[in-house]
Amino acid sequence: MSKDEKLEDEVFIAKFYAGSTSSFHKYKGYEEIYMIDGELIDDDGKVFKKGDYIKFEKGTEHSSNSKIGCMLLVILYSGTNEQTG
Image (cartoon, rainbow, N blue to C red; front, side, top):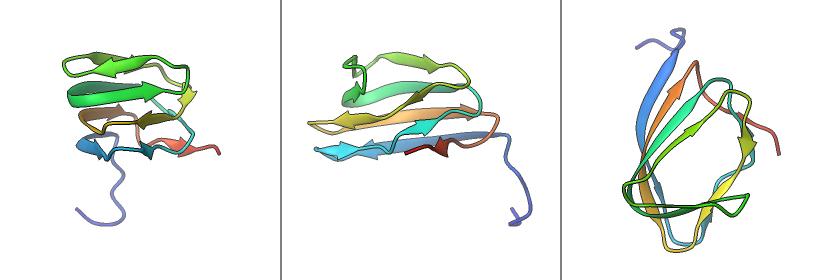
């Protein structure tokens, strides 16, 4: 892929080490997450565990953290997220 190509959608595996936190960000499109292992905590306190499916709507703003670590499959529709904080 050349540098000039723009991706509409992205699929990747993300790993949070114990004590990791994501930056506060806003979704340009939808995001779907499948929890492969571990535990992820959203900034509103909701806890996601192995086997959970999460869908964030376009325009959602949040950050996440993991006290014990986790691995997740991430599908981003309509491009990457924007850091807002």
